[in-house]
Image (cartoon, rainbow, N blue to C red; front, top):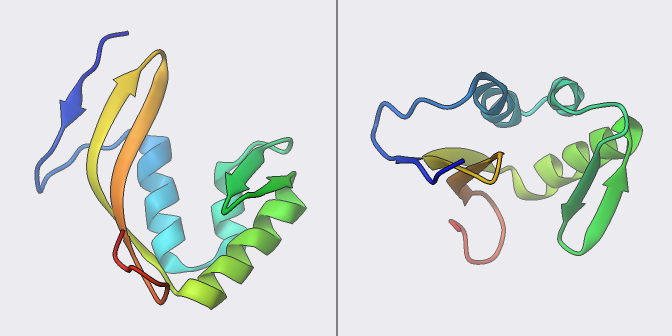
Length: 97
């Protein structure tokens, strides 16, 4: 697949990505886990979280620690994958990133 990028105030995200961003910003780690397969793996800050229970715990801990919000900036499609570029703001060093 070719590289296509979208940047504007009316950014059209794929439904699954849009749902993830909305649920992430709502702050409910149990709802966010609905965006992941039962055998999903997440890598964040040098750690690996495998399975929904681990992902729920990771989401709850990061939301409590950083109280972050995701602001989508662009979406692109490369090699059959969707890539989201976003600004993340919260209570962490160097916020926003």
